[in-house]
Structures are given as C-alpha cells and as structure tokens.
Image (cartoon, rainbow over all chains, first blue to last red; front, side, top):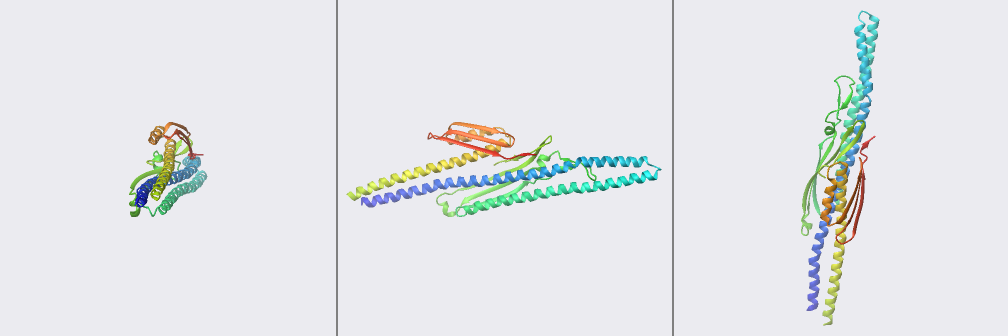
Length: 239
Length: 110
C-alpha cells in the first residue's frame, strides 16, 4: 500500500514539476526568440542602410565633382555671348562667337547627360539596395519562422516608411547646372524602415504557455555633411 | 516493511536528485537568459551612443538595476563610429559578471 502511494507521489511530483519546467523553459525560449529576431532585423537594417547611404554619398560626390566643369562652361558661354554682342558688324567675329557658343552648348549637353545619368543611377541603386535589404530581412524572418513553426504563429509587416531620395538640386534650370544638396537633405535622403511583428503560441503549446506579443520598430540611416566631411547617421528609432 | 522503507528512500533520493537537477538547469537557464538580455541591452546602448543620444549610459545603468546586480561598473569608450562598453558587476549569488562588447560601424565616408 505504501509502495503504491510512494510511486504515486513520484508521479504526482513529476506531473507538477514538469509543466512548471516547461513553462520556465518556454519563457526562456520565447525571450530568446524575441531578442534574436529583433537583433537580426535590426543589424541587417542598420548595416544595409549604412551601405546604401555610403553608395548614395559616393554618387553625390561624383556629381559635385563636376561642378567646377559646369561653372567653367557657364563662364565660357557668358564670355562667348558677350563676344557675340560686341562683334556687331564683324561677320568673321560673329561666326567665331557663334561657333564658340555652339561648341560650349554641345559640351554642356554632354555634361548635363552625365549629371542626369549619375542622379538616375543613384536613384536606381537606392531602390535596388532597399529591395535587397527587405529581401534579406524577409529571409531572416522566414528562417526564424520555420525554426519556430511548431510553436508559434507569427506575422510580420515590413515597409519603407521613408525611401532614400537623391537629395540634390540644381542651382538654375538650364543645361549642366551646378548641383548642391537640398536644405532638407538629411530628411529627404534618410531611409526609414518600419517593422511590425506579432506572434502567438500555437494551440498545442498553449496548454503549457500561452503567449502573444506584438511590437513595432523603426530603423535606418541618413547622411550628414559637415564642411567637406561626410558621414552616415544611424537611426535605430524604437528598437 | 523493508520494501516500504526502500521505496521511501528511493523516492527521497529520486526527489532530491530531481530537485537538484531542476534547480541546476533553471539556474543555468537563468544565467543564459540574463546573458542574452544584458547583451541585448548593451547592443541597444551601443546604437544609442553612436546616435549621440543623451543619457544612454544612465538608461543602461537603470536597466541593469533590474537584474539585482551589485557594484555595477560600466566603462564606455565612444568615438564617431566606434563604441566600446565593459560591464563588471557582482550577481546576487556573489559571482562576478563580466561582459565586454564593441561595435564599429564605419560611419565616416572618406
């Protein structure tokens, strides 16, 4: 009789302690899941945003390096136009001035094409890098989701709340202008990603631990220029 | 009677073994958990420092207070794109908790 009771006590002890243990380990595991998923998304987002900003800054630098050339062409054009005005009645001088103007306009057209190509390429690269970043994060989420598929139902919504734009503007509307940063370049060029994630334990594990959580994070990076020194500022908003 | 006594002894030994194992694994679990959570707090502090936000150190110190750590000693070294944090503290069980972490992001564009 005692023997049976003692065996029963062992079973009762095990039945009491085991769920408690599962609960404790379940809580540990869920915290680990939350931290790991957050850390992965955050590090990918920040590192990729920094790379994107560096690439865009590189394009802007290239664009601004063309400014001395565009200024020179503009000054030469003004000089040629002045020469044309002062050459009234002198057909040879007029022809020379007109040829000079045509040649400068042609060079300006080429330069303008190069400038616009740089801007378009920067814009395209920005879109491409943003898409690559979203894909990479999506892959992390899928990987984490597949590891936890038997325990958790998770949902993630990710969107670019501010796309990185090439924050440059011409100093005048003509061929081959000088380009400079817009006054709000820090805001215009920054990339901000918003990530909403929610999870809930599936039905079977719910008998031991019923947990549901949802959160929203933002992260990204933007440019900063002090004098001639460029740098990237990270923005790990609510992470 | 002997069998009953034997069963009681077995149960006591089994119970003791079970409790010790549970306590041991829970303690290990807690230690791992604490390590992960403090690691996350330090990572957030790195990012906070690199964003040059105010009171990052104070926030980290305040968060660490929730872990019953004693004699918390934090060392911060931050430059434009590099952050180093060293944590040295005693746990409530009298053990030393030490963690070193650095983050270099290469934020300057040459």
